[in-house]
Amino acid sequence: MLRDGTFIELNQKTFPNCHLHRSNSNDVARTEQLTFICTRKKEDAGPTNNWMAPADAKDKVRPIFDGSMKGRTMYVVPYIMGPEKSPYSKIGVEITDSAYVAASMRIMSRMGKAALDRLGSSDDFVPGLHSLGDLDPNRRFIMHFPEEKLIWSVGSGYGGNALLGKKCFALRIASWMARDQGWMAEHMLILGLEDPSGKVTYMAAAFPSACGKTNLAMMVSALESQGYRVWTVGDDIAWMHVDSTGTLRAINPEAGFFGVAPGTNAKTNPNVMDATRHNTIYTNVAMTAQREPWWEGIDTAPADGMINWKGETWTKGSGPAAHPNARYTVPASQSSSISKHWEDPEGLPISALIFGGRRARLAPLVYESHNWQHGVFVGATMASETTAAATGAVGVSRRDPMAMLPFCGYNMADYFGHWLAMGPKMKNPPKIFHVNWFRKGADGKFLWPGYGENVRVLKWMLDRIEGRVTAAETPIGCVPTASSLTLDGLSISRETMNELLSVNPADWTAEEDAVGAFFKKFDGHLPEAIGREKKALADRLNGSTVGVK
Ligand code: TSX
Ligand code: MN
Image (cartoon, rainbow, N blue to C red; front, side, top):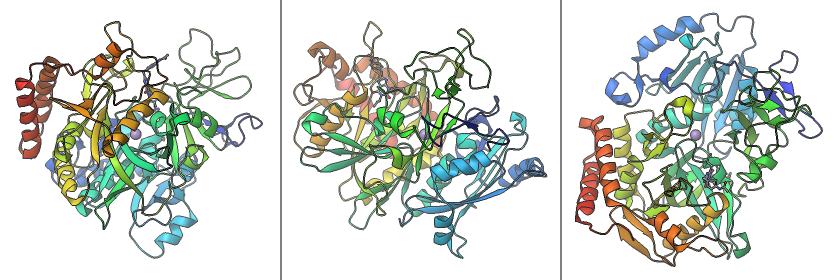
């Protein structure tokens, strides 16, 4: 890779075994418009997925694959998604003509001998065929065949389009398998919150993109001096099973972090800054004159002699030096925050599920749902406001149920039904919360400091789970009472806290209308219980006179 330019050597003294890869400038992110769920019946893919009939999809893509690997090296990549010895892990085999993909898969999965040994002579694996093709976006397709558990991807070498174990297998194909087999494949981080007695409580959280999922998973607690610490189990995907005792247990199917670099710095994510000092593949970052990686928001000033992500000399005013979707690929084991139980074969017991989004006005800092069914409704109605001007207007709210909109391998309404069906299988189902780190005041400033201070919200959840603190009813769920959030050592006014926790019925009534418009897409398929929860919310909003608690 160094010889043919696929990899560029970074400073081996300060960043040992770190390399830079520059992708084609038209191939820098997942391409949802070119991603298809190919089922015999269109309604099995549902209204939120692109659909193509399996035979049509194969006829379309086969000619693009034809001869595409000629003169290239073909890699056969056997890999395990999940810990080597876990009964919940699954095997994939990716065929690829990209050495970068093969190298990235070695970090992101348990790849090679471990997978072959586990597979033996079994044919129980998910085949994935991948070729860079000619990188022409008009000849780029990411095709999923969930009925035969098969993936075909051509025309992209980037991330979720090409590392087939991640979004294609561990979310789209796995969500289909999970529905069939009675488990859950979710777009969730997994963390452990340690309390002063040393007991660790595990939580899984789903947020849409640009909400800081990786930062939360690797957070340095602001309450460390009080004995509260956060341990990382995973930052992107959770596979969850109900065990024989009725406990929901989660494994992280991945072995690495494929994280967004811009905005990452010693304050937003110190653990990943340390982890990525060695054995890391950087993609589309800038490089300093000292051959060190650099990106916007890294918190060191851009200096003369820098090379941008395209390999050009960077000057002030020539635009961002790193691509906004530039990435690091790093083994999870390298983070000092990694839980010593992160590879436990039986997975970790989940006591809380957390949904969230970026809502400047609407959602309180945290609220607790009334029960599993209501919690599923909260997840199904998730939305987040856009930040990247490149993808449309800033501040536009996009619905993203359970953060699965681009990743659910079947009809999303049936997926809500599957969630509803899972709750009753659990003896003590996790509490379901919703958080919003991004509420703004009238002055347009963030009301909550976020980052390491978020541990205060996690501690409140833990205290709720343990029955140690009270909460106040609002039409949307329960919010912390004045004294139940641990705020010592934080200078935040009572007024700001009231604003952060307030629920405005007029705003929520408008939200309920927007939810109704979104649900219209699913007509025949939407589970009745979701409709009942929506009606119950409307009734509570109608009956409420005072919204601010
Ligand atoms: O990741 C974030 N988290 C979770 C951290 C554990 N971000 C970054 C989001 C983009 C990926 C946040 N941004 C968080 C947050 O909790 N909160 C905010 C908003 C915010 C930004 C800056 C400040 C406060 C809040 N304050 C100062 O910069 C001083
Ligand atoms: Mn993700």
